[in-house]
Length: 137
Image (tube, rainbow, N blue to C red; front, side, top):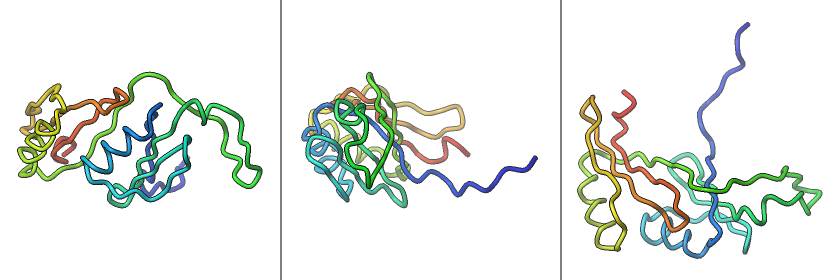
């Protein structure tokens, strides 16, 4: 059996109770453009050709209240993971920017193939990786 085609990842979701803190982290510190928001429910950021969705799980666990947008309930508790693709020559700049903002670096290492990753936590406790895309080459 052959599978129908998949073009790639269109969106990924993280969950955060404090959307204002998430907006400051992803918008102000990381510099992702905000493309949509619904107060108390979600904020969406453009990441390259895709979208990072950040939902308040207390709002999205409930059945849809809008018949025009019948998105099924969803949500997660506890830390998730998201990786941003970063040019390898920019990783030192990112490390400096994050440290200057008071963000603790959890890990900064080279993978067996020589590619590098930096790990931090967002305000909701999600594990955020900034990585040379060569980690998957």
